[in-house]
Each structure stands twice: as structure tokens, then as C-alpha cells.
Length: 224
Image (cartoon, rainbow, N blue to C red; front, side, top):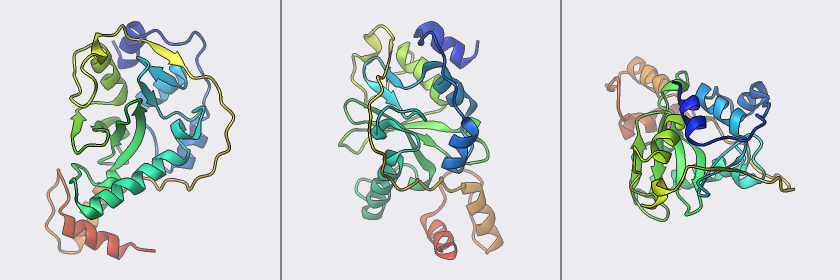
């Protein structure tokens, strides 16, 4: 059974799927998106799971939950400032974190885009609202929803009673709003950084976090 099949059995979606122009969406973002997210967004549309978790969607009904709206860029800027200050430390570099959802309590969900060329391998990270703690799920977004809503996985920064609820999805009602935002720059492909670093005499591991001094050197060399 696929993850989307498991999710629709666990949590019934709206009767009518959406039709999304994914070529335009991915062109606007400057990167390909995971197939499971495209299926999820098509099948469910914008809305909230368990009256708590909203995923960013190409047809998000407000600018605060729109995948190509202002929030992903604003969140990325906040992460960069947090990384600059170093308090609290981030488990992933801001350029590899792409915001994909938000909870009513203020936790954010991210794709961990370790390689832009392999979106099917992107993991999910969740940060604590107004706190330093993070949780990383070793799987894709739809698999994350199935695991959390079924109670198989408990995310420490989520309310303890979330998994005790009957899984549900509520479509969002359209709201008129005026969009004003600066487009989000796509995440940096860490594979490209590793290739550049080795070509320039830096010793970098094939996996894991890139040393900060190597990333700074790459950023200095690629400033426009």
C-alpha cells in the first residue's frame, strides 16, 4: 500500500480532488517537489489535519499557508538570523530547510532538502514553537502524516493528545487576500557544495553536515 493510499484510508479526503499546474508551481519555486506531496496536495487540497496541522499548498487560502507566498521566505530569513546568532543552534543549515507546514501552536514543518536532485529522499523536520527543540522524521511528508495521525510516531514537540483524536481533515474556506512577498530562493544543493569544495582542496565528508568553514567559503565564492 502506498503512503497516499494509507493516508486516505486513515483520514478521508474531500470527495473532489484538485487540479494543480505543477509545472508552474515548480517553476516558481525553482525546484522539483516530491511526488508524494503532489499527490497529497491534489487529493486533499488546502486545509487542516486534526484541526491542528496546516500544510503549505499552492492554492493556500491565505498568504500564510500558500506554498509560493510570503511565509516560506520569511521563515527562511528567521532561520538565517538564528543561525547567525547561534542561539539556539540549528540541526540543519537554513538553506537546506524548506518550510512546508505550520501548526496552530506555532510549530513549523520543513523538508530537509539535503539534495535538490533527490526530492523523494527529503526528510521532515519539526521545530518547537518558541523553543529550541527539533524533531527529525526519517521519511517523506505523507508517511509522516500517516505515522503521526495513526499514533505510530509521537512528535515530542506536538501536544500529547494529538494522536488520540480520530484522524480528520477539514478543507479551508477561500479567503480574499492581497499577496505581497519576495520569492523564496530555492535551497542550496549540498551535493554541489561538496563537489565545489573537493575541487578547491577542502576535505568534506560524503554525508552529514558540511563543516561551517567550508559552507562559508562556498558562500563567499558564489556571492552575486
